[in-house]
Structures are given as structure tokens and as C-alpha cells.
Image 1: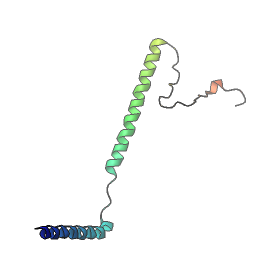
Image 2 (image 1 turned 30 degrees about the horizontal axis):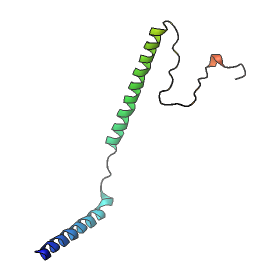
Image 3 (image 1 turned 60 degrees about the vertical axis):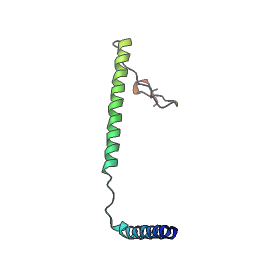
Image 4 (image 1 turned 135 degrees about the vertical axis):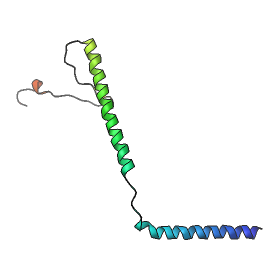
Length: 97
């Protein structure tokens, strides 16, 4: 019984190797995989982020206007950037710049 199992196992390995060998020969002639699913996921993620940031900006403006009616809304501080940041506006620049 053991020799029968070993023979079956050897046959399985040989046919497995044979199949792998055949598929490796055919592989260069296969159609390339499509990038459509990956591109559609990236496009959906991009537009989701754009819509989310627009909603966040609008909510920030409305909250600021409730506390300071009639004033100009300052720029919102970046949420995930903790380094130094400074906004240079043209009307506040010194005359030589």
C-alpha cells in the first residue's frame, strides 16, 4: 500500500511539473493583464478625496462665519502636515519682493 501511495505521489509531482513547464512555455504569448480595475480604483479614490476636501473646506468656512460674521475667512491650516507653513500674500509683501 505504501509503494502505491508513493507512486501516486510521484505521478502527481511529475504531472504538476509537466503542467508548470507547459504553462511557462505559453506565458510569453498570453494577453497582458488589464490595468482597468487598478486605474478605476485610483480615479475613484482621487475624486473621493477631492469631494471630501471640498466638503471639509465648506464646513470650515461656515463654522468660521458663524463665529465671525462678515469677515474674510483665513486659510485652513493643513490637517496632516505638522511642519512650518507660511502663506505669503501679495498685499503684505515688502516693496522689494
